[in-house]
Length: 413
Image (cartoon, rainbow, N blue to C red; front, side, top):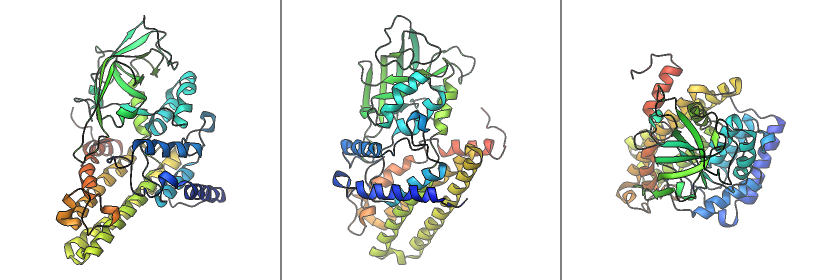
């Protein structure tokens, strides 16, 4: 696949380009390369303000069907948007888990009442969502979740009932702990994977998918200060927290299917835009090497060449996966190629950035020899350690590819 635009796609591209040019102003100007995961350098109200600016422009829910309030953009148009965004002077996006993860999940698995209650406020960025998956003993092995939810038929259900399946009246009472909950301290709601039948014959059964309001007495959020200095991640403790019985997505004890569906939405049209963003980062590293004279070093020059070749491989991998998605409607397990590749590539680039910055790169603020794009290289270097762990570790990605693409035997359990 090469990106060939129809006249309609070209018109859409011009609309995106014009809108970005007109709106990257005021408090959002001068934030190129800033914001997003791994850094607290942009105030959170500015992060959310930009998401609401995008919402007002009709750019939130781009891939959602029009009947659910989205734009109904084609795959090519979604790719165009992400590429134009990466090429603009716009700040890095705040991960909007309501838009990218929960919204598509509710469209696929939710009831009409849940869709009517939650989707509009996701589109307007009135309500922010976080993901309640990982636990201290359930990371890559998500089926090992121990957070419990018990139905209390006498609960009043609260005012935020969304109209779910399999639970008629009452409230779910939730006890347990989640960890690595991105932006949990700022979120209004959390989609939580809970164990609702501890006696189920297998770990994958007996799990339910609940929508839980975060601002209630039974929830404690404790930010985790990362070694990069940010506090994006959190521990979340549920101590008798409650949510309406109707706020269950899918069937009671049938949440594994829904949870896996959510993960399927995690990768897609943004991959080419991501590659363009990485190309911009690479250019900053290259400029830094040229400015301080290290581009003449044979080893550094070889590593710069290796990184450039990696960028091109990343691009072609992304095009191949998008071609498969366009042909079949879903990328399938082959999408793990992209996650496995870019996470390792970016770690290598941040290590190369540290080499080029020298000892000054080990101090917050960077070295005098670095360009503005690499001035925060220490923060990036520390944060990028997580790339090969979150959203499925590299080991998990290899298992998915081995079993789902190459047809190899399952790893012994």
